[in-house]
Amino acid sequence: MGLFDALFRSSEVLGIAEETLEFAIESSEAAHPDEYMGFLRGTEADKLGLERSGLVITDVLVVPGTEANSVSATVRTSQIPNDVKALGSVHSHPNGVLRPSGADLETFGRGSVHVIIGAPYRRSDWKAFDSQGRPTTLNVIDVELPESDEFFDFTQADIDEDLQ
Image 1: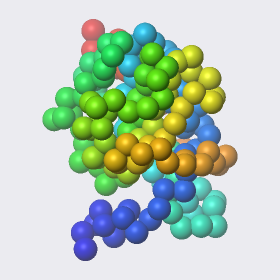
Image 2: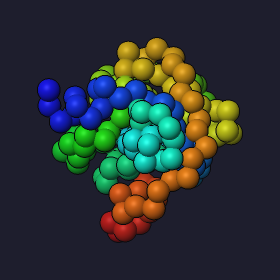
Image 3: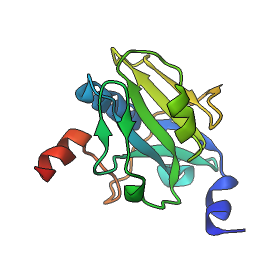
Image 4: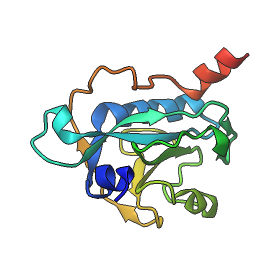
């Protein structure tokens, strides 16, 4: 059994941290009318003070060089880190449709949880899907996120501004 298998295949995703979901919704709205795209990363529940085993989605990794427009977001695959903490993806649909497109399904193989956030970007304007594109339940968990150098608190706009 490899490191990935040992760490994560046996650990279920318990949910997404409230603060992480809020960050993704705000980032999606800020990117509008373009799509927003990021990768979901997790933290072991016991490190967050929960008395359960499993993972909580706590981070959104925005990959530098992601190109977005109103109908798609393209990530340069060479820029995606080989990250054992990657649990899935998050992206927005500026048209408000909360179901995966054919192009979305092609990218859902990486990770087990995929979140789509739609306009008008209210707290209720999101849905989670499994790697096959089937709707799934993703609990929102109110936990204190750990202070860490690994937490990426920036948007694609911040990255684009730095690259100019």
